[in-house]
Image (tube, rainbow, N blue to C red; front, side, top):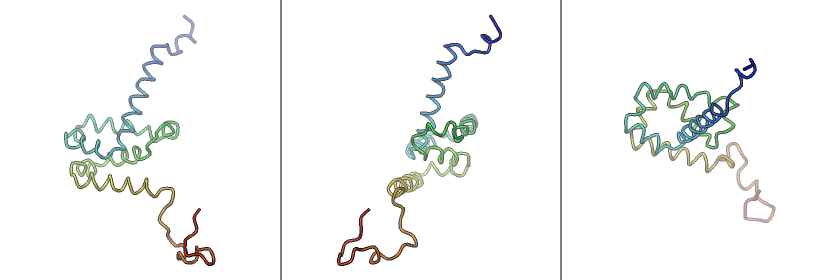
Length: 136
């Protein structure tokens, strides 16, 4: 065996690394779901020191090289929020779950068309002689 062979990953280790990557990616993306977070909180999983350490470990997903694989950006936001004990405690409450769910829905609903701020009144956006606002 040569030195270059000793440092090269084997097929088994590549497979294991890929499986770990996919498993952690799936878990991180599941954090985008407020109902899942609520379930973890109600089972007291969010209070377990080993789980809190695991959430800290998963922070690497926020790096550019890994974040590009995330399909649900709220997952990274929730991963950050889960670093705070107050957020973990609040997630036990049904009201907090609904609040988080509504905020997420509002973001999805408006992220391409944010509410108009500091725009001229609608009358300034109308075609001359038309009672309908302009469409894009």
